[in-house]
Length: 295
Ligand code: GUN
Image (cartoon, rainbow, N blue to C red; front, side, top):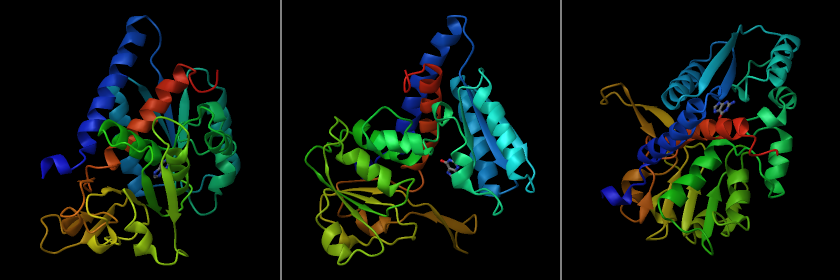
């Protein structure tokens, strides 16, 4: 059972060690540490958790972090002032604007004001465009996590049929592009499925690697999975359960208890894709510091 599970936590720890070693070498050479900033508008509890996990992860690998906390009522102009400041500050290598933003702020137009060289979330259209063109770019967190999980678990993608369920801009669409690219971590044949797909189970049953990013708890059932397939579960949902110690359980987009019996490898939730997402931010920040993407 153990080897069936793809241990995202262990893989994330390994990558953090690699980043920590590179950061230590930078500091030992007498240079300043890489610096990641986050902008948090309002008091969304999930965003607070995400930002404090990011601060903790930065501390662990020797990356400096700073968080700009702004009130819920912050105007677009005030937010853009902070973004312009961060764009120019030479001691900040990369920054993110935590999403979701309060309803009166338009995330797409805010993101367009981030300097693409510092856009370590990989959300700016320049970075998504560069990714599409096969040029070096900052990869968004979840696609980065999926690619690294597959690669570091020894799961070949070349020539495989990957079926992705969900076409979001932050997961389904970019991971489809990356896995179909002509590159050592790509070269797969990718089918991207979505809410208008006809005969979804027929397609998912053809997948050598099935990636579920639909945002619906336990959506993928065992009869939708080919025996021996690799299953990557991107979902994370808190489901009320009075019998559970905490009053809830965490579920993904796949029916784990049944699918684990037919899949060859599977990511658990939690502990699969999730731990890799923050690592991507650290990795992108280090790349920004080293000016590895835009040379
Ligand atoms: N909110 C949830 N995930 C993310 C992320 O990866 N980046 C940003 N900026 N906000 C998020």
